[in-house]
Image 1: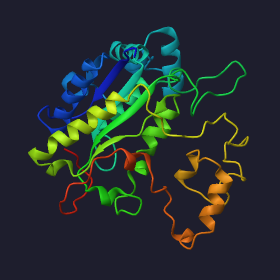
Image 2: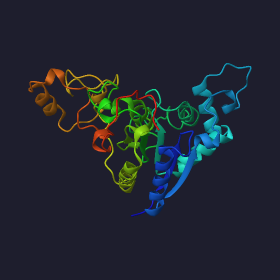
Image 3: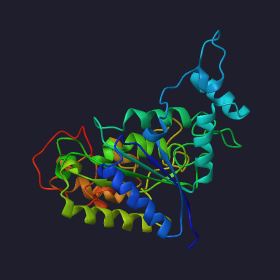
Image 4: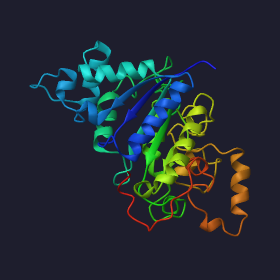
Length: 305
């Protein structure tokens, strides 16, 4: 097997956290598998998460239109040095591992700012093909790369399942996995999630570490999440899912390409529980690749260790 170049993006303020330990396990596993890696430790780097005109050498006397300014600076090679350094890492990488704790049902602000500043127009969006069509949702400059989330969440697994009070983990990660990774062209692997992360006993740590090592061993060949391609024929000219695909169904789950869509929908509507079916299929990407939930009282999912 040919080794991969892997960029690991880490967004946690505490090196001694569970997340920090899992990061070290993951990087060691990559090395042992013959992969090369680079690390962007955003807190250690004191990464600036704020977009402003200085990113683009923008004339302060002129109105700042971020998309246009970033596109011009990207094409001219005049983005700020810290942004260009991260983009060079992305260009080098075959795969991105993005690791963070779940804070208030999303990523820490420093990581959101990394995407805001680094994924500029011309690189991650606003890319057009030879025929003039916009390349996104499965196409684009980042096509051919793989991306995977490594997540620690404070809530027990059941509360983040298809009927859990916190919402399904695949729905919570949809803006990142579908709206960022897939949008920019990357193939998205199912996330690795540790639930109950602030209550993991020492004796349970090795099981989590082993599960992460197993996932990373499959990094080059694991089947990605089957999101529908924008230009693959499933959407009409308005970029709305064709009416013959999963008719009557709405929500985020319709953007996963199910085998034999019409047959799947017919089977669903013929079941007694069809009216109560969850928006996300029970066999979700996260459910298939997560360790068992820790037994602990339910607490808000706002914090991950």
